[in-house]
Amino acid sequence: MSHMNCAPKPYSRDHRRTGQGPARAFAALLAALVLAGLCSASGVAAAEDSPGWRIQVRNAACVTGQSVLLGEIADVRGPMPAEQWKILAAKPLWPSPEKAGHQTALSRERLLAMLRHYVGQEAEAFVLPQQIVVQRGGRAVDGAALERLAVEFLTERGTGLRGDMEITDLRMPEYVFLPNPGDRLNLQMSGAVLPGRNNLLLEIVSGAGKATRRFAGSCFVNLWRAVACATRPINRLELVTPDMVTFKRKNMAYQQKAWDGSGGPWRVARSVGTDQVITLDSIEPVPVIARGNKINLVFESPSIRLSVKAEALADAGIGQRIQVRNMQSNRKISGTVQDAETVVVR
Image 1 (tube, rainbow, N blue to C red):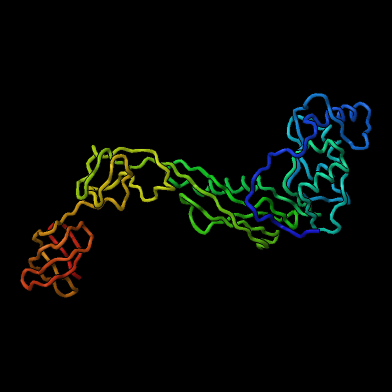
Image 2: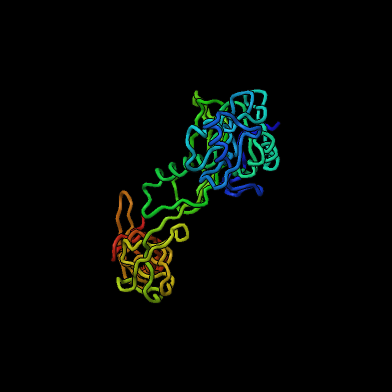
């Protein structure tokens, strides 16, 4: 007897078939059930041709009665008539866990052995998970449902992103057991959806609104957007002109500092090669004051305003800090560029 609420491993669908049984399971049984209204000891018989459907066992399930029913742990995939599946779904298997909330875990090998015992050799054609966990009562949410919940959540939160968003490498629990039918699942993030790896928090919330359990998850977000690339090599301190720039679709998850072509005028602070993405740290505003320029150095306070001539000791744009030399005292002073002729010290 195992007492688990959630598998810690990332969710992944299992499409492998187990054993070497016939691929054409159940068709003869279904015909016999409909025509004769009775079932063989195994409950299943093979058919000559593949029926076009299969029985897939879940990796987590909740049961209600004294015995586990086939329909409580498995689903039919494909065009089986509903009435036929209703008959098969009612097939009793092994005993359920004794008490509400108790769980039983079966490995793939043990599950196959149990199905062979209760269903017959045709169980070889079932699609089986690596493990199944069966709980008495409550509600099981499988990995596919958790994945859909996460995709809907991320898509809604990512509506403000510029570009085409793609969610990949979604890592969620393989399943989650809710203790009570009225419990719900809630997803949270500590911040906004961003290109790259994002962390998720999955909560089980009771009917009273209290978070009873929490699980971690994550995903990778690709954000495709047109960004500026160099049409030719651009050397340091060159002005960026339209003929130097072309726009190419890039993944912002790997180009988070890419320049989108806005603003300016700009010059290159670090050389950029042909077809290379122009990043925000490879460009800088074209300076309104250049090194060696003669400017007015203004001292401002609530009660006084003085102005003297000074020499710029570096390049700078409006709003940037710059060091200048007072031409009267020869002292070096730092101030803020106000315009092309004025540096202010406060």
